[in-house]
Image (cartoon, rainbow, N blue to C red; front, side, top):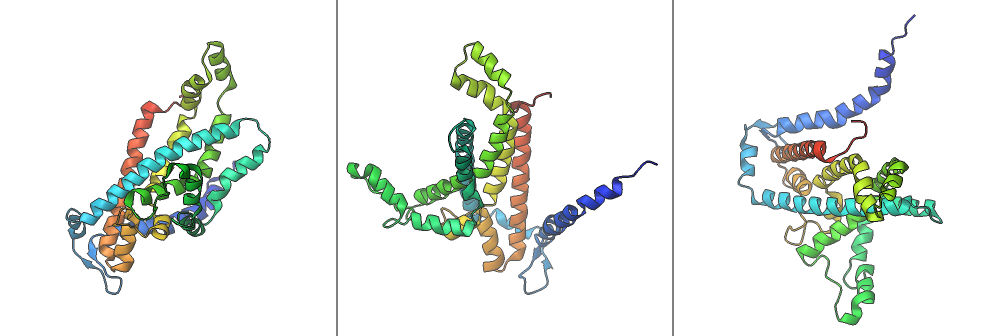
Length: 294
């Protein structure tokens, strides 16, 4: 008698389907609905058509937060990718206490974001923070002084980007797995042909781990587009809104100003932007990513 495994499969995926429906499908559907309404949370929503979306074209703050989010995303993704790959290559080499170093790279990513933000806020203190003390120790002889990290938009954005590098642990682990999958025969063949170490890295290693790079870049885009907790706690969006990001603006519209209708429309815009960027990256990946056996 042939056993039908459909019911068993549905039973196993049931909890995921339930969670996905409650925490993803329903919120997205509600955001789409409320985006066409005037909703203050205290009164019943009133249908206003596309007024909330038309309002975006006249909102100067929206342009600023989109620009801030784009700048943060591009720099943090590029820098994070380079640092993650370099760390993964270093950690893939045989060394003493290899397990310790791998754990040390991954450990910061398991710390709560709130605690991490508080630690870095103390570290960036212009007078007592370890960042400026280290700066003075290394370059104090030149007469240069450590920057006022939260006194200008450039240094505040730099502080957020540098802090983000502490969370590269998960990406490093994925790159390590990708590096282990690179065939040793390719390294040997390239070495026999006289290709140097850097040549093998660029012409053998990077193409072979390009699917892993694609995956991590997409995850980085999603995370960067939704950055919220760290800048909220570290800079509060300042100075002069130079670190004010899209998710923070959505939050303020919804819970500070009580304009849930416009906040929902902004959330839909964020969802569309992430979806569009993901699609563009996947299309580009068809030409830039190498899949073995494809």
